[in-house]
Length: 381
Ligand SMILES: Cc1cc2nc3c(=O)[nH]c(=O)nc-3n(C[C@H](O)[C@H](O)[C@H](O)COP(=O)(O)OP(=O)(O)OC[C@H]3O[C@@H](n4cnc5c(N)ncnc54)[C@H](O)[C@@H]3O)c2cc1C
Image 1: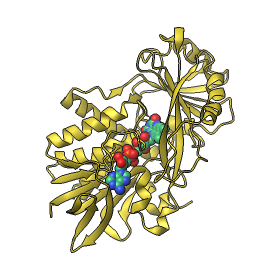
Image 2: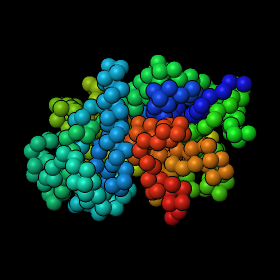
Image 3: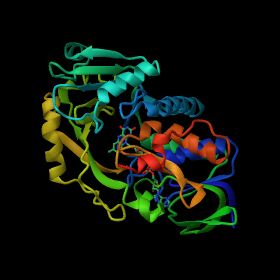
Image 4: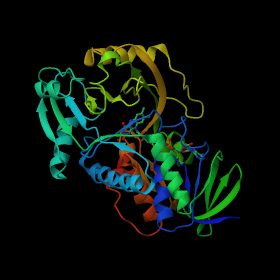
């Protein structure tokens, strides 16, 4: 039976980051995935993810976002891959009565985090937004936070590059190989996969939308998987205003989105729908007319200059009751770390959380996991 210091189950955003950190630390590490990442079956696809440093979901997240920027910069230098485009970020709000991006007080918490961590930013009014960023017809009365160092990451490229770099540092991977069971056996763990059983001293499980299959029964009802739809709209003659050079990524009322990143591909804009709960064993990944009908009026109200709807894609959120992260030891197997860090906003923290859990499993803790991510808090309502 093959033996490892660390086995990582799920090699998506978090798993590939943990794999790279462990391989860099010289561990004998293996990453196992049921599909062949990067892929479009889970939570880490769709061309772009907002990456920002000042975190409106809670000030405690900011150290992970900052460390992730550093890790991706280092990886880009090491590999030559372009992973992050720092086109800036606008968080706008104030006029419409929506909780921005699920969290109440999102704009205020973002500004507080920026001040506390000395993150370069400006707070500007609607006039200035319209003047500097012509894609945005900001509503009179809207306030806006502008973070010039934020922007978007390319999730498929980042996962692919993390896996490639991890392998270059000695990590092994097994893809198209679902894991069905993890048990503790004599100070080690036995990981049962479709291709056989392997042994590992420590295990990290980052199984995204399939996380529930590895949780104790009492925790399973606490994670909810929802179907989310992303939409691309034609920018037509407005292409210069919707280019990354002129348009920061944004979070605005209950919408978020991106500039056009590929010529003719359109600007991606989405809203969150938290009521469409699905079974990850059998998800409906088709785009329904009602998905477009739900988002389109909101998009038109905020971006009246956008043209026709071009296409849509489905992606999965896995959320805790308060839309935080769950990062903790398995209650019955202390050598197994569970990482369910989505709730719709995990990607920007994935490099640092992956590194933190990998180094902690190897006995070399680096960035403390805050109490807010532990089960006692993350799974209580
Ligand atoms: C539509 C959408 C928009 C988002 N926008 C943003 C954003 O702008 N900014 C941001 O920061 N975050 C965003 N997020 C959240 C972010 O993308 C996720 O938090 C993150 O990608 C989740 O990564 P993960 O590693 O947990 O899951 P995944 O990347 O899905 O990885 C889980 C992996 O586990 C594997 N797996 C599952 N079960 C098994 C098994 N039994 N055996 C082996 N392998 C298994 C899967 O195949 C998969 O590869 C968004 C999410 C969605 C869906």
